[in-house]
Length: 150
Image (cartoon, rainbow, N blue to C red; front, side, top):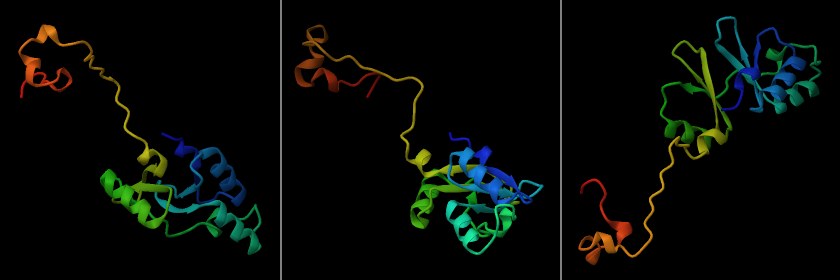
């Protein structure tokens, strides 16, 4: 999982600090939280560019350039529903929050699309002629035999 915690800034952070959080967080956004860890908004590179074009300096507040209505979801939302929401809204990051709006985790599209990793890979060896299995392999090829019951 990517280090989304490095992308968190407080509501008094400057635009420059938000840029640094975007860079160090490795999820391409900065998350602006209040003192109680509630999600106030997010800042992207595009938000920063638009703010600079409006004349907001790097020393200005990140809250002046942030998206105040970011797409977020309940932390209890099932994986498939999170993936569907991200595809529908064309977003690559999804903050997951609790009932009070407190940030729990940030899900990224890359992580959701990554195939699951299992700690114990299994390899079934099925080579040879199957002569020792005798009657079991007369009608069914050895790789297709039931193992451990029907």
